[in-house]
Length: 334
Image 1 (cartoon, rainbow, N blue to C red):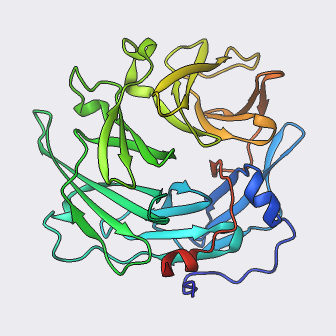
Image 2: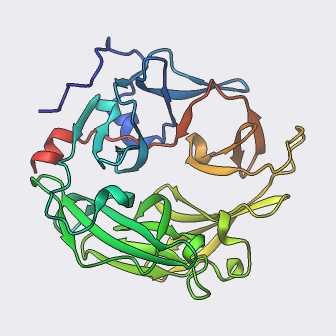
């Protein structure tokens, strides 16, 4: 049974998508905390030149200390801001969520002193979901010295387990799950000459970390701002370092690890832009539009129609989400 302790009662929302829609269409979500410290999840809708939230939230949670950390196959997961390291798994389109077990006390790492990076992936061999957590602590503030550790939770089991595998260097950002692996960018603060701009992949079935090279054209660029993005299930990497354009490469053939530049977006929009303007790709929307966010609002890009500006609704995080009918309670009971 799904945990309901922190769930706020909702009327059946008329904006709730059907099962077929949830499994086929990308649906950007608005996530915001209100004055009650309630996390509200609403569908995003484009009306004219405005990006608005649906009239009724599809889910509300009393989660003042949590924020979305990623997604996999329609399941969102929320990590706690505080040091306790609690994680919540949710399918907002089914109005379900469950708290994952706490970290066991016998883990060797001093968890409260470590930064944590989470990732949810699907093991296609065992047919189950796994949550991985990488711990990181800087040992010397004057040198790039650090400690790393990894724990894993097989969803459906009662606890986490410590594994010997660790990434070769610290990682950062929201992971992208693609072709059986989770992917992060190397943290540029701790990258050496051999790891600058590298991608760290975690094979969910094998429970192994490996390094992937970025497109060769990016090796000499400002890798501090590289961004990974899920493009309809394929791994994409965004180079936003130019003031005039944004290039996006996609790894269509994951087995060959070959990158193809699929997008070059001219970001010299007619609207007046603030200084230090920099956009991030949030993901794919309907009609294969790309949703971009910057400090002055949102843009939608289509290869046929180009870039267009849309005003945003309120102060909320936008998350491009492809829904599913997967039941959280069934996943946790597997």
